[in-house]
Image 1 (cartoon, rainbow, N blue to C red):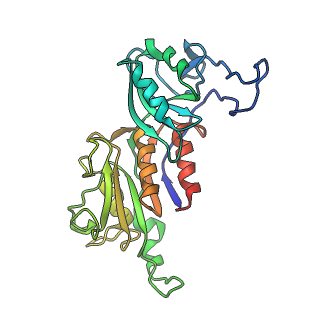
Image 2: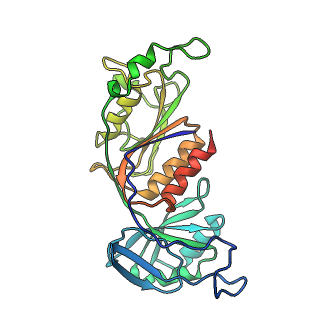
Image 3: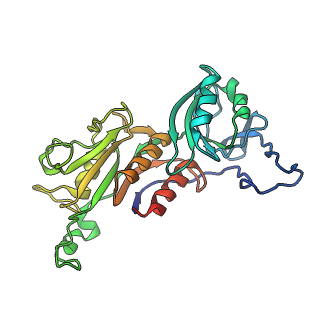
Length: 289
């Protein structure tokens, strides 16, 4: 799969862990390494909030209340989810990931972080960072009109015919005539999901995703880069244009499963090359679907 990342900003630090199965100095064979939970709030300032939990943390503010995190696991998250549910209301499971990465999105009370020590297969704890909308400029700047005049190996115009573009954003106003006017099989917006409201209607109540979808594939008075392409809409930003990394990961997994050829992410937020969001992004690229 060609994964198009537009303005996904990653500028952070992290505490890395030894790879699973690789011994570290002083570690007893078969024993998991003990690593302190250190939240990096700003350069030079770290807050130790627990002992013995593997953590790769980036840019988290000091924990003062219930906090959203993403954990990485070395196996299927189903059993771990059951274990966390058994711990009671101190830990809330939002999402499970088992396609691009193995892990879960949680909300935990700071006083309950130590409970994660009992979780088998825990590889790392990361902040579920907030994401916001960001948008580049439009069609003529990338030379799309010149490409439309070209033909592919079958002699067909290069206009996106047969291509599915996943828009991971604030949703899409599929009622717009330039975007087909409908949602579902046979429509230009062929499918999608709303991860904010957890339903099958990815309607855009912020506007950014519709703008992105128009640049990608509008076919009306104004045309997008690939006007004959189909769209998949995954709503991960709310009416204020804000969302979370965990919903981005869930949308990436679904886009791959739905057979997207291109995934567009026009977002900004914190991250690092080894956090769950980056790992899921790379896995989507490597899936080649």
